[in-house]
Image (cartoon, rainbow, N blue to C red; front, side):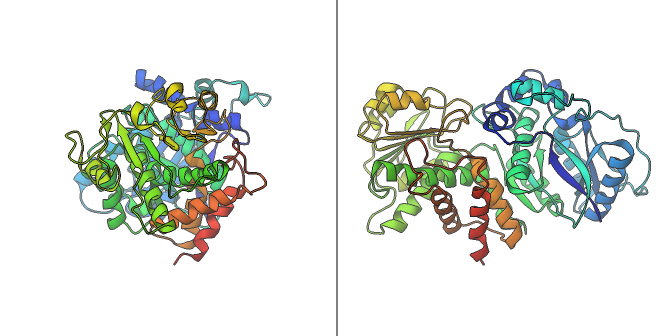
Amino acid sequence: MEIIEIIPKVEVNSKKKLALVYTPGVAKSSLTIKEDYDKVFDLTNRSNSLAVLSFKYEDSLRRAVYLKKTCNVDAYPLQIKLEGKDEIDFVIENIIPNFMGVDRALIDSMPWDVPLDVPVMSKGCILPEDLNIETLEPVELRRLFGGVIETRIADGDVKKPVAIVSDGSAVLGLGNIGAEAGLPVMEGKAVLFKELGGVDAMPLCLKTQVPSEIERIVYLLEESFSGINLEDICAPRCFEVENYLIDRLNIPVFHDDQHGTAIVVLAGLLNALKVADKDLSKVKVVFSGAGAAGQAIARLLIKTREKLDSSKPGGEGILMFDKFGCVYKGRKENDSSLEKMAEITNYEGFKGTLDDGVKGADVFIGVSAKGVLAPDMVSSMAKGAVVFAIANPEPEILPNLAIQAGALVAASGRSDFSNQINNSLVFPGLFRGILDNGIKRVDDEVKIQAALALSEIVSDVELAKDYIIPDALDKKVPLGLQKIFQHVE
């Protein structure tokens, strides 16, 4: 049968293109939209995207195919649960940042082939064949293409997309820039889903930032998707949203900022400590950043350490810092999630600064902000120190400066340095494995196995201080992650 397939406008076959489509380049497009929200129609595919809403997915799909054929519009089929007119209006109001409009012909009991006057605004067909994409600036690339994803009609079985759900409250390292400004990031993410995992994915940036409303929208649209990838939702609301959806939905829910980041950091750290000849269960680890990513990394690290050595608490020797200083029990700035972290880290009740906390540390993991880690702070760390400065789009310290200051191994989230610690190594293959094997929940054991599988892709012969993690475009990565799910019940 004819289906709607979500495809990239740009083939990501080099690090340069990866940087243009995703990070760090995508940040410039997001900031441009934040400054002028009308730019969303120039720099994303919103100007050519339409949501098709009905009470049955197959009906929405049939109409989406019709609209693609007759109007050349990128129509996305959506099914909404029948729970009242107010609910329909509520969903439409909150999903509109992704679309130029919502087609409700089927909701209003019109025929599936009722004509619709839609302007043809796709920019993908007017580019010169000899255009050298790699010479473009990120904003210019998106302006020329009109975003980086589109749809096409294909023959095959119905494969519902993964929804990349965000409220725009914690986009990259840019903070609360809103749904429209977050859309370029989610489009870039959709490109990587397809290019690296063969998974169709669609952005779903929501106007609301109220947790209960985010939960309600995703619940009402559940039948439209094969899975949910939560993205760029700030802590602590992201924990509430994730837990609610995991308990309520019958499709897998994965918060990539938490668990994708945790998996790739753990994989890189396992290999970095091999290079440094240090024991994961014994190293002193300092975190800068105690939001969603920091907490998830710390929790997975603790679980792994306890798995390796159950004789002592896994949080021993771990300190976490945020903008208020070190996290400790009873600290007045703690929210409920930070108080829980304080109970499983910082056993000595340290209350000093990051400058003091990092002294003698074996590992620094940064998921915070540009420039937080100064070279003299790196110099104060233990011999053979490992520095993971993975704030995006600008790290806590550039890897070359960390090495100059005495670190043995340095990594960042950037594609223009070696040792790129990026979620793109995890989510495409992980979702491919989840969907192929009918997995509904990704627990801690699966996350640890995923990290081990990712780390083992780098052989002992290849392992070096500037090669601790596979290249983001290495096709062995999604294949390696897919395999672990074949053994999960």
